[in-house]
Image (cartoon, helix red, strand yellow):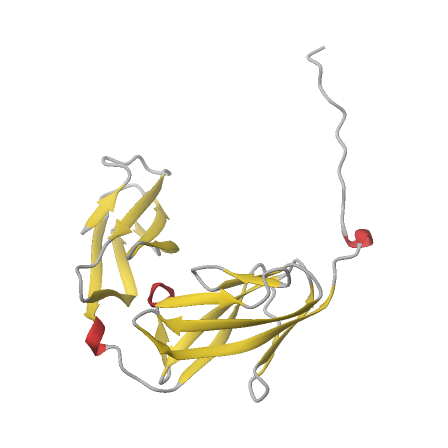
Length: 193
């Protein structure tokens, strides 16, 4: 089933679409497709909750057609899991694949992780992500890793329906954010005079 938070929608509004697959099915990795004659739409995956996936997109001018693609749980097969990293706010980190270590320069930086099975991307809603030390690094449902302080944490991604298929890697944060790295802006209050 598919539910939409606004109907009708006004151009420029943020539309939220919740997709709930039937028992025995997953939303495929190409997930939700949104098409419109006047714009290219790329719905953004924002959360996975109680077996449903939620996406958002900005409503364009014109009619939007939504299509969800599903796959059967039993069709998810493969043996070799691997990870790849994506830039978040222009930063990615450095990954040593032989040692399975992602090095991040300093706390406060973020990067994204994509899990692949036999070379094909696995949708984040098919995975459970976890961190061994959330004071150092946390990982969201979408695979975004946010670093908190200097140290090491092990990030694990496991298939929801078969947690024997998982991959782990170490995130090493080299240094904390220094006070000199921060910018503080002080604004004079406006008392309405």
